[in-house]
Length: 384
Image (cartoon, rainbow, N blue to C red):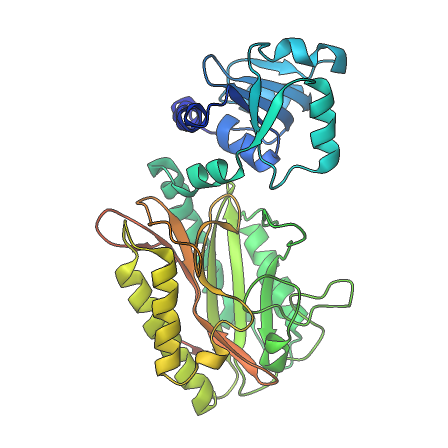
């Protein structure tokens, strides 16, 4: 459970940012954000005034929220006509996370709080959540150990003639048995992938997922991830999964193959490892996200592989935590300096259309001294 002191510190940081924007409070409605600040993921609205105590208003389930919440003032969600009286009448300017709030929900609360002014605090919320506390880093460290343990089992159950979906199903079964939630929260609209176990040209299939590799998927209606295709020989088998344990996830990719890899694929993998090492060496407080991305691109271009670097994706690392697509992002246009406590999945990969894809991914924490890897499995290709 979320320690009360942890919850209070998070809301204190939120209050400071709200006050700096001239806001009177924030209404936190998105379940992941409610969990981050209040410690429960029950269906609830969290009111955080700049001056005063937070209030958790629970739709369902009140009894569970009462037991789980780090917030002391927990009440059933009031009737619509009473909602405005529960929120401080002097609070005129209220923050909302527009990035995830459906229009229908916005209109509902705008109706309940007629005359109040609403301001988008999406970036404030995401920036606060990007810096992990020691408590969160410990959670993510445990997730890294557990995910690595399950990945370490893959050579024992992957078999020639397996379909991609068979490999995915076996891996997901073991992740669930190890305690992973089986679902990966993502903030981006319509991005709901579980993981990737893809091989050969299927791995290079372009698609809708906002990452370097999408996979062919099972159908037009489910066009990402593993397919019904048989895993071939002498091609890279990419296993790219996140494990979400006790809410916090880490992300990892490893390469397997039945037989040998082509010289082109071996070279691309070696460059992936070199780029990863350079990024880890430079993943430090104050480092510029855009400059890290540009440095990775230069290394790929110097190796003659710039055309294939990251496929359709325009990043080389993304924040992880309670969600798979947190801040920061190592990409062009993201110029904010890194901060100690941020956790980033570094994933230099190469996509060769019609042939396949290859690369590496590990989740790292930015520390005061140097980056710390949270996923501990060796990086090497596993030849089966």
